[in-house]
Every structure is written in structure tokens, then in C-alpha cells.
Image (cartoon, rainbow, N blue to C red; front, side, top):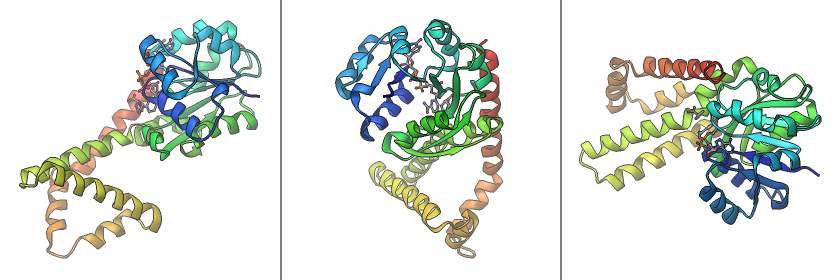
Length: 268
Ligand SMILES: NC(=O)C1=CN([C@@H]2O[C@H](COP(=O)(O)OP(=O)(O)OC[C@H]3O[C@@H](n4cnc5c(N)ncnc54)[C@H](O)[C@@H]3O)[C@@H](O)[C@H]2O)C=CC1
Ligand SMILES: O=C(O)[C@@H]1CCC=N1
């Protein structure tokens, strides 16, 4: 029997916990650790799982999922080092933290996997990418995948792509919410009630995302179908091009990937 421990039940840790509970993982097989006692008590009550100390959780669990900030990873690994056994699987969800970083701070031979999830996992529409460390067997990798498959889609990527994944799908929901904020604000500028503007934007986003997913058409084709010659859409898109919005998106995501790359170095 597998016991899974989530170390650090903040935004992403709770999101994963909620997905595992929704997917029917027995609550007695799930434990959490959390530095904030009040938050831990609230999670224990809401999800019906046990809260343990980091050492108790490391002793008990055979799958250890690390969901603390990259800056807290070094300290957590030092704390649990002597309580991680050969055969355990350690899965990190932290941006930038490499499998080499984890392996160097865990007992020799422990299996490690690196995963980059995203917050839509909260509604079972997550996108996660997983990479195996050097001692991670196919069974370990399948276990790491199954954690995130409880609440969304999972792909396997070479670890060299994890910084790019972090920039695209890890941080991605924030860019979309940013665009939504801007479009809702535009509606208000144009005189729409805020609630109406918000409803129009959210359903448009949902419809456009569903079209992309269900038709499999290239986004350029879908965009061109909206863009009547001499019409409203091309008038707007010309403004976005004039303001270099496409270039800004690319530069923004390059910055996110660079930050992911720098995070592990900054935590040592
Ligand atoms: N929020 C997001 O959209 C995503 C976050 N991540 C990664 O997930 C990790 C956590 O991020 P968030 O959940 O956003 O941060 P958060 O700050 O909401 O959660 C971290 C939690 O860990 C707890 N914590 C810190 N040190 C601890 C320790 N030694 N023992 C036990 N608990 C401890 C904190 O009290 C906090 O509740 C980060 O490494 C981040 O890169 C990855 C993908 C998406
Ligand atoms: O902003 C961050 O660093 C984390 C990683 C990906 C999404 N949130």
C-alpha cells in the first residue's frame, strides 16, 4: 500500500490534495505537512486527512511530494534527509528545482521526479509535465504521473524543457487571467456594466478554448475566420501588432523561463 505525503499545502499543495481526494484516493493513504498550523487544521477538517510533522510524514510515506517554494526546498530536504528510505519516490512540484539538486540532497539512489503542474488542476483541467531523475524507474514515473492525472492532463518531457514548460503552462493561467482582466476593463471603458463585460469575456474565453481543443484547427485559421476583411477584428488586431503585444508575450515567457532556470541557483 502506498502512502502519499504532501509537504507544503499552500495553493499548489492543496490543489493536488483536492484532486487526489476527488479522484477517490483513500483519505487514510494521504497525509499533509504545513508550516502554518491554522491552515493545516482547516485542511485537515475540509479534506479529512491527517496533518503530520515533516519527519513523521517522511517516516510514514513512500511517495513524498514536495510543494514548498523553491527557496524553502534546501531546508526541507536537509530536515527530512535521514528519514527518506531507498525505494521511496520523491516528487518535486517546485519551479526551477532540478532532479540533480534533489538527488544531491537525498540519500544515494532515492528515486526523484520533477513535475510542473498548474492551478486549473483545481477544476480537473490541469496541465502537468513530468521528468524522471536518474534513479526513477518506469513504475516510479507512472506513480508520479498518476498524482497529476487525478486532476488533469500529464505529458512527459526531457528535463531540459522544464524551464520552458514552467514559462508556458506553469505560469500560463496567470497570463490568461491578465488578458481577461484587460478585456473586462475594455468592456467597462466602452460602457458595459462590469458584470456583463465579465460574463461576455469568460464565455468567449471558454468558447475559444473549447474550439481550439475540439476542432484541432490551427489558431491562425480560427483567428482568420473571425477577421472579416475591413471589419472590426482586423482593426483591433492591427492595434495589438502596433503595440507589439505578440513580441511582449514572447519576451515575457523568455523572462519566466530564465527565472525558472535561475531559481535553483538562487536557493543554494
Ligand atoms: N501556484 C502555482 O500556480 C504553482 C506553483 N508551483 C510550485 O509549487 C510550489 C508551492 O507554490 P505555492 O503553492 O504557490 O506556494 P504557497 O506559498 O501557497 O505554498 C507553500 C506552502 O508551503 C508551506 N511550507 C513552507 N515551508 C515548509 C516546510 N518546511 N514544511 C512544511 N510546509 C512548509 C507554506 O506554509 C505554504 O503553505 C512552489 O515551488 C512553486 O514553484 C508549481 C506550479 C504552479
Ligand atoms: O510563479 C511561480 O514561480 C510559480 C511556478 C509556476 C507558477 N507559479
